[in-house]
Length: 308
DNA sequence: AATCGTCACAACCGCCTTTCG
DNA sequence: CCGAAAGGCGGTTGTGACGAT
Image (tube, rainbow, N blue to C red; front, top):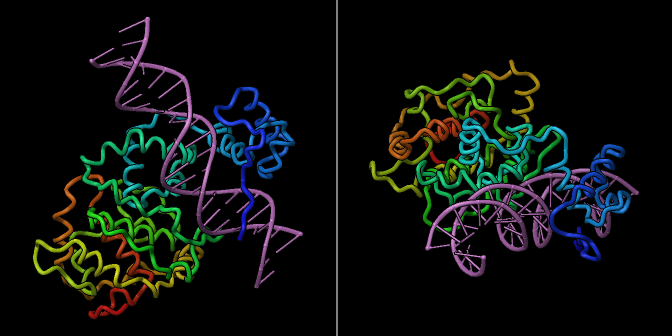
């Protein structure tokens, strides 16, 4: 489909906004409300493109926006969310009601990214939020079955932390299916996605990986583990109905129904434990993610063969 | 004082999805 | 169902401030 350009450059001003322009925009939006951005500049007497107006309003002029002065707690949360979600700034920003995705994104690039070497998060693996990803979000913030079952774009063959990649892929898939994680419970784990799920104990972790082929030894191949888990494909994930059921009737789904009970292999668990030795991400995030997926896909962990 | 490099932030651009007639 | 318009998102660039040389 051919699109008309969102901004024509004919006589339109670019660059920093002046206080006068800001005031025009504020006055107009306060009077007429948000929306109709393409016609707004003409109606408001601004020599800007509508997109620029929307951007200026959304990120700087809108009442209630908090700017600057990120707290250490916010820093930590951003880092953790980024590890889970990748560059999905809009999703990350949902955890900060008064922050904008734009500011978080800039803050990440200016400050937080530099901390990555310390936390051993590979900065090259932040592909979870690629704009090329194709997802459909319903009004409730969830995804349809069809969308959940879609293949993820194949990752480029680059050297990166496969565990981090795995974590992001899983997080991406979970998020595509059930929407963004709810606020952290304090230890950064994933089970908060599903109210009622309890934090896994170490013994619980040993029950997860039976349906996954396990590494040959402690020096396992990252890609092997990653591929094994992703090979499950989650294509039969029927998250939409279950999620709605869960959200609409929280008592109708029992957390204990998580389909991991009969599995005892711990090789992969030990393998992952060797990789995460910092506080930013721990293997619980992986386990909780996998476990949460298992919660919605009873086939995922219920069979010892590798067919979901 | 002048130049250069770095950093932080604001803004733009292109692509995608959603909405609506 | 189709296509155009609108909205949204993430990547990238532009630019001013500031410090080092």
